[in-house]
Length: 38
Length: 575
Image: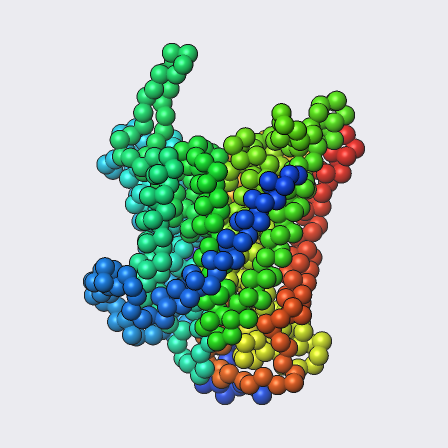
């Protein structure tokens, strides 16, 4: 039972990291450089 | 302090500086994807690995795809290392019949080695058998190091490329770094360590008869092969509990020097790789100079603190002067084979990098010596740092530096031809703030609740230092321990795992996001308003930013720990 709990913690942690990556992605400007300043 | 001690440090620094250019060039060739001299031998292996994994070596990834591949790969690695520890009792090459590792400790260890931290809440020789050490710990040391280098190179590609939607291929970077960099160096170094007396055997522990006639069990195993990657990966997880203070893990002064060199060698070389990839080697030398200044300051302060007499002992009339008969200074917790200079240098190197290897007990350092070791980790491991993580940590500080300089002169900041805009600064702050948030938040929690205080061996500011050091070490993915804190409890195993995970992946994600946004930009030509970043002025700026950011963030906590202990010691109190 404890093993499932620990493995679930690992999966949740990586799930949070994926969510964090998506959040960072949401903060990025479009990749076409259209908002780049001179 | 002795001339011999300083010469030892100088020799180390010269050897490291000399290694930067040749290895930096080699790393660039490996990561550019071209044919290698070892290609005849390893090329077929590389091709087979790609075929088995279904990887197209020329297919590049966006930063999100790169991040997804990295996280997926690490998730699987964490799970496998956890499972390996839990079923250890069923595994071969375990003549000591070591049983399954407790769930919370197994979680801590899998996170620790998966994040290149190597925090060890366990004693290696009484917890893990040869099979688990070889297929679990050693494998993760290779893969976590390759992951760190891959992330650093992805960020460098972000700076070097123009109008690119991709930053490389994680699987190809991981494979090539492991095959062409880590494995060859480790193969040669393992043989060197065996020659110097490090055991490499699957025969199990030996029972010997001591001079008094008693029976004693001597732990041994495949140590040399693990030792090489332990140092090269700046991982630092010891086969034995005493780590590199153990005579089987660091038998001679020569192995001591080589171990320190292995810790730094890739981190130093990557600065040169960076310079080559952005087509201006001075940029790499500027980063290395900043690292060298911080390293030299750290060694001087630690060596000075440890070579001094302890005033509490002086008051008791104890002679602590350096003479032909004794080392003098603070020798508590230090291996006599390495002495004060060798211990101070090793401790500085290991905390500058993300290596948790130790050849002395940091808990026994003088308060100010211990404070410097903590500060090294609190500066986000940018003084050479971990393999890959040191370079991308330093590049984050470069972004902050050009941003601050841009505010001062009223121009849009640029770094190596790329405009640094609000997105990069936001991502940089996310990456730089998560480490202090984890360190200070968890330390503050641990010092006010019973499970956090239960593991302490010392009271007062020294006890506080033990807890602060543990979380600083975990969040900075260093892994060295101050000792004195029993961290093998459910509370510490879980909270240190949280700190390690945040300190690794919550930094990597925004770093890769920066790589993606930078790669998409064009390269702007230098103008009169461009701050030169390859010279002394920029190095000075950069050092100022690192010290001020680190100082402002952690100074209050350090005052409560080692600084308070130092002042109490001068007043005659000890803890």
